[in-house]
Image 1 (cartoon, rainbow, N blue to C red):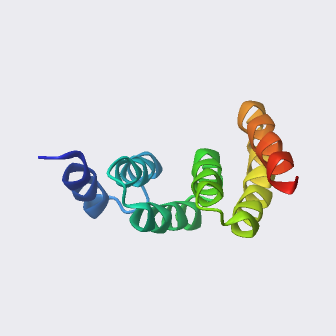
Image 2: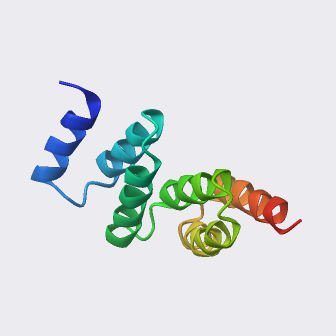
Amino acid sequence: MDRIALLTQVLEQNPSDAFARYGLAMAHLADGNTDAALAEFSTLTQNNPDYVPGYQMWAQTLAKQGRTEEALERLHTGIAAANRTGNQHALAEMEALREDLRR
């Protein structure tokens, strides 16, 4: 069974599993299916608003597509989540990306 099928099966059992949802989004990215990945990041952050890596990768993916304003919106929300959860590493990376995108 491929990783997308496996992760989909896990999520059928537990739709709010943040790790599996993030893994599915990343698997879609690896397969070049950006739209599916973006949809999974959206679902991930709706169900798990403190799962900071979801915002970070969502913003990076949008930025790579030239969707700067959307990326900045995701960074804003992700930075707030990183502050809430004390994730200083992700906070620093997202702040740096935000500054790069504002230039």
